[in-house]
Image (tube, rainbow, N blue to C red):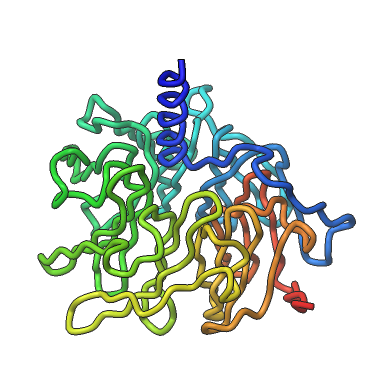
Length: 349
């Protein structure tokens, strides 16, 4: 009996490492602000959101937000919302949204779909060579090549063909089986971050060279959730599991990326595990935690802290975008938060 219990606990732990959607009630959360601060609006409470994108149309911008319950579009001016379906069937677990040439590319639990002029014009599924349809991230590395990150490997789409790279093909192929995040830096380097129970870390591909970076190289954690480039050219790699993790700041030295320093809660992060990293138009960096809200940095100094008490829909913010108007849109575990262009960053107190 003891052996059975230990086996169940081990399997459950591995599953949680791969599927990082946090369980409700894992930690006690602060009481939300009531009323909301000036310049802050909440929408679609009760829905989990992991992805955001903005599509510019002749009528103005349209916000798309995806998550476990489906895909929604929002008019950023009127705040009217509506669901998007594929021939009446709702999308599920929409983890990545990508706009390119007027098309919305949707990564969800049944592959990739392309929304064009309000109609699904293409689908990429197992029938096309996508071995795992559970998409976690999307990245166009050039005009013809789409990388599709999944729970068990990477799909490379060029035109109608899909080449599949399995996470089980060897440690020199991918950083891990589950590729959580894809990113391309200013010099066209392609970054892949793994989030799984074994392996992990990041792989960087640039000009035919490959570099693996992990705990042994000073990385703060091997479970990667977000990658972003800072205004000074450094790469910020965030990650962790539950209440462990932080951010590693990497700098390129003689063509090799090196961990320059790690940021932890003691350095001003809102929480240890970093869920998402966003750099706004002013160069400020928003480090979103798993349970404790957002720490906003100017350089390496924290200048603000946002939680539900300051108006967030939830303390777990999974994606941020900023419109040309200056408005911020945040995808959270419990709805969307809009922070308007005239919002004033609260004092840290």
